[in-house]
Image (cartoon, rainbow, N blue to C red; front, side, top):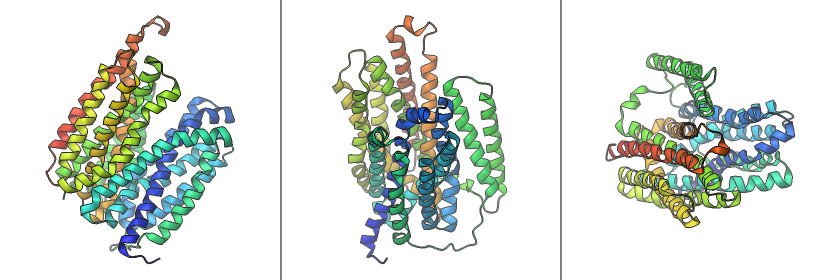
Length: 460
């Protein structure tokens, strides 16, 4: 299908938006179905939790591998494979006869999602000129927010009227459209050199990240017999991974990239930013429902303005970064986010809707300034032939930041809980534990601001 370049770019944006929307929709739509899945299979909550955990582990562990494969075999080929794998995995999820079959199908979905997440930003930044990089990444950020916004609403409707299997079947027509567009719109680019994949490095990195996620998940739930064993295994695999990468003729990750100041500082700012936002997003529902005693429907209405604001303003934030560079808007955005989260510590019993609403909107504005600018800096910090790897590092910093942020919030809240039975405890103690998360999160924000401000002035 031959298009003028300008028209082709629009089709590329649509194609990548479909992949991004499908993967983010699936991440948010499944959570609302977990109670129904538990009843349907008459299984334990610990088993159903792996419907989410298995998906997350595969995505996080395979991101860098998918980025490297796209650099070796072409973005179009790996992105098309991601669409196909995700769509087949969705069909298998919908037809799952048991909870274990569902978990395995979700892992297959995660493999496809990792290819979509690792390559989406790389494809759009390759298709568009560098001066428009921030704008298109801002548009992709809007699609991410749209996926998270519509997921719970659409999921609740589908589960209530068509059953939990329908939340997976809805991916099938979307996936078919994505496969068709990918095959017709994206350009074929054959590798110049003979592709060589560092399988040992990919395997060790996968196990290192998997054990790290298991450690963080268990740490949030309290100490266990294997808690520190998971961390030890993670560190051991990571050390072996570094040793192999240093001696591999075709490493999965060229460690010399970490000498690039703009690359490592942008990754660090991204990691701490998502840590901060994930911790805030985790504790806010507890504050609204348990402390202020708002009904669940009202809690949802007070939470979604963050994603809605990002969806509407992220393209503007991207255009701003195209004009002035990444450093200033990213640092201003982080400052707004950090101060806004800290302002939640001043909320007490009796806080009204307006007190919550304006903070959530300002938080969304800060995210809209930071994400497109910082993402543009990460993508632009590596050579053009390594754009797939840069894109996968971007997704990896986001996923790890979110996982660590949630585990961190759970841990801080647990430390702040009273020893006495809950019935004897005052509400103020639970409020104090939530406020502790916001206070410590503010320190994380200060670290992110420092890292962002000390990056190089230009990301090119």
